[in-house]
Length: 618
Image (cartoon, rainbow, N blue to C red):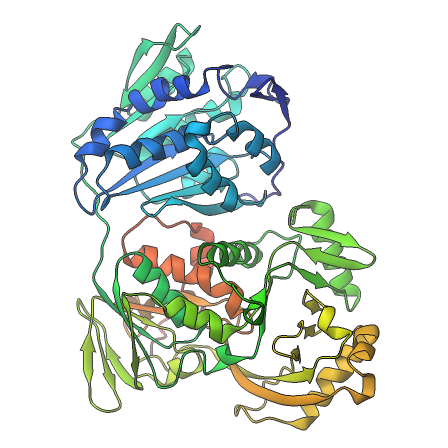
């Protein structure tokens, strides 16, 4: 059983000139005045990275692991070396753990001292995550990705599943920070090492050298840098085995938020994608006039709640990377306001803030309202069209009626076309259970209705969504979205005037001043939209390989993946799920923790069903 996930505490940093010092460990992050030279000698040269990068072949992936991210100097220098030496059709994956990450302000100050690394440093700063536990992705270049793992180094590397080609054993001196140099971590690094993997470290402490040897590394001492007499180098026995990413043709069924993000994630990895839908993009549940990008804060850092938190950060990274929204009528990402609407929500928000599970960078309170410093509102249709505007994505109008897994999975359309590809993603929401072989899925349907209320002169000034028991979105094209009803009894997306009354009554109850600004009882509902949400029993999406429970034990449907059941949070959840699927399909290192991957895996419902009913199969 894993230990409970604890909130992250940032580093206590003092600067001696331009050199950051750890107040906690009373040690500097690098040798004063010689950070670049030290990092190059101790980590880049010691692992022979310039020559190894130059030898990489097309499609090959090289992975570097690190035990302490610190200021990011080692990783940024490795990225620059890779971009200088490697062919453009190769990839570098960087992965680093950090228990006490620097505040963004401290990191900015530290990086200002290295103008040579400014472009890469700015990419890091642009997507540098707030101090929340777990894994966070930063794309430093088109072919260089960094996974930051905030938490204890041993625990984080024990969760990793990819192999590493070179290790940077960095951290404060063993005498100042003994916890990071324990045998458990060194054994974990050995278990994650590819044959022929190298390692280097600034320290030559005897217990570290012995621990590495006991873990299985060949280790030797080299002359140290600066005042240090010695440093360590090492190697895992065995002949290196090249690792390659995968690319080909993919079919995505469904052009809503899940399908559009999936198609874009694959296209950005070089896949040729055909996306099929019987209607225009974002015509189903993804077709609301406007939607909120947000997650509900919680103090309990379970896998489910950490998915909610991390998916919000991932969505914001996607919006930044793709420069969306670009125009006022596409939305605005200036955070959201939360108004507790009962005792439970009041206690939940207060605990999230007080425990630090949602740090001040993400959550604050002012005059009875909570401010989430991420998220906002966007138009789903505009977002989907923006995602699909890619030279490798080909839209196709049609209704998929069947599919067949295999090395080359196929889909059959209502007009008899049979299309094949190397991978198939079903992003078919409420229609998924209608496909042959997937009727067993435990997904349900809830009907929701939005009310489009005419803006007034006063309401046109609002810039942030306000969430209570429902939500109120600032005006887009003269209309506010007020919603939304929740109905599991009706399975037809039929507009009901009673739902408009419910939405406005709820607004009047929780936000009376806003209700009055819209005209009070004279507020004008211009139009309404009802749609069906696809939900799972545990309220988490199904994102992963599609299982086939008709066999005991169940097996997977070859090269068939699901991305469904996002409920009312599709704008927030789909980028992370799309990234997870695209990296899995492409055989690239995945920047989502195993515990969260397991929480999203469609097979979880097969496992639960078998526990209750041994021998169950469809």
